[in-house]
Every structure is written in C-alpha cells, then in structure tokens.
Image 1 (cartoon, rainbow, N blue to C red):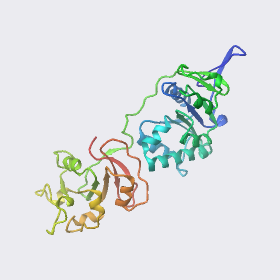
Image 2 (image 1 turned 45 degrees about the horizontal axis):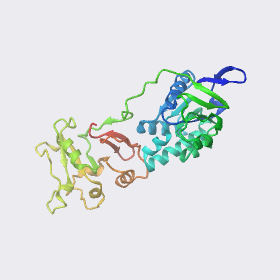
Image 3 (image 1 turned 90 degrees about the vertical axis):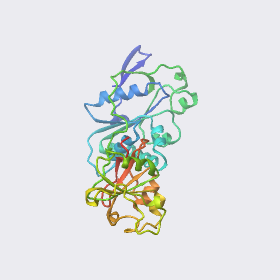
Image 4 (image 1 turned 180 degrees about the vertical axis):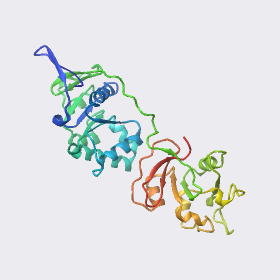
Length: 338
C-alpha cells in the first residue's frame, strides 16, 4: 500500500496497492516537486519486509554498480525491488557509452528481471525519448502532476484530471485519483563513496599513471605524505625523448629503488606513441606494471589497456580513475584523495 484512492461514486476510499507480481514493474511520471521522492520513500519503507530494496539516482557510480550487478544473469539474486529516481538525468550524466550500457541493462531487468525476482520502479519527468523505450516493458503507470497537458495525455491519464497546480502527492493510478501516503525519508549513503578506495603505490610493483592532468597528479605524488609512501617518480614526456640513456628523472633520486614505489607519470598520447623504450625512457619494471588511467575517456582506457571491456562508470569527482592489472577486474580508485 502506498496511498489512498478516492471512490467518488461510493463516497469512499480504498487502499492504493502496487503488487509487482500482478501489476508488473512501475513507471512513475511527474514534474519536479510533484511527490516523486515521497512516493519512492513510501514504497521503500513499505517493501522492506518483502524485498531487498536498492535505490539509485543522483550517485551515478552507485547506480552503475547496482544496476550492472543486478543485470548479471549468472549472479544469484534474492527478491529485489530496484527504485530508480530521475532515470533521464541518470542516463544523461552517465555519458554516451556508459549511458547506453546502463539503458540496455535496465531494459534487460524490465524484460527478464521478473523471472529472477527483480521488480523495478522507474521515475521520469515525461513519457518521451528513452523513457518511451522503457514503457513497453513496464506493466503499470502512475501519473503525478505534469507541467504540460500533452505530456499528461500521452502518459495515459484522462484530460479531466489534468491540473498544472495539482498538489504534490496527488496522482492518477488505475482509473482513480490517489493521495500518496507520507513515510519518513530514507537515509541515503554519502554521494560518491560507493565502491571507491584511495589509491596507494606499491613498492613491489611499478605503476604507470596515464592521465591528461599530469601537473595535478605530479604535484600530489611529490607532496609530503601525498601517497603515504616514498615514490620514485619518472616522467618521460617531460624530456621530449632526448638521446640521453635515461629520459626519466627520479624526483627522489636519493631513495633506493628497492625501497620506493616506482611510478611512471605520462599523458595518453605519449604512452600510445610507441616511442617509449623500456630500459631507456622507462624502467624495466614497467613491462608488468599496474595501470591507473585518470582524466581520460573510456576509449582512451581501451587503447591504453588494449582491452575491449567497458570500465566502470566514473563520477565527476576530479580524483576518480580506473585501476587495471592484466587478468583482473578493472576497479574504480580515488587517485587524488578528493
């Protein structure tokens, strides 16, 4: 139950109940401040005893991790309710490649999730664009206040209940006017902290940092306690491929190589140029180094790692980067401690 439905002919009210097994996944349409968040709060609180509830929206990284994990057909799942707030903004924030992958994963959950015990609630501002593609897989629609009369009609609500001044929480659901029940706001996890750990250089294994922000990363590596470990920093691009035996310069040359973490700092163009020579421009340990790809696109990542995989989505925090090691899963790291 998420509210009360008015029955004017009977001068009565009845509980408004959404049952995923009977009604299918739910599309919620509404303008800003129309009661969308209140509805999600109410559904979340009312479903905790029957479902494992996953709620995503503003944190794109958390949304990516949650949706992609649920969409894995080989992953065991329990009975799950996925609440997706403002799906249009989420997909736009994700960008072209990650947005397309996220869209396809959501479509897969809407199409096949029911057989695996996964129900979905999508919240959007109007029935158009990518939301129209989702609607074919959604079993029911709840319409809150919409700013445009045409959007209201396209959503399937009758013209008689359109009111641009409709109070927040009033909705059209299954041929009835419904007042959404109030529930305590659900606690949200801090934005941008989902699945991210601070990167630390390893003294046992060299690291190549490929970044378009070499200045900021170099300053962090040279800062006292910037990495909590002594670093031997080599920057091949700073010397423009000289004829000297070693192009890289150790910023902390007094630190023995076996006592410091070797870090090569380079921009993607230099790394991909094919002119860096192991033993001349970069140390021999670079051949089996970990890769940290920062301030680069997914296409850059694929070129640098020579991999076809789409790495996990990175949020807007300036320090976000991908950590890659051959044969292991790519993970998201915080390079700058942001």
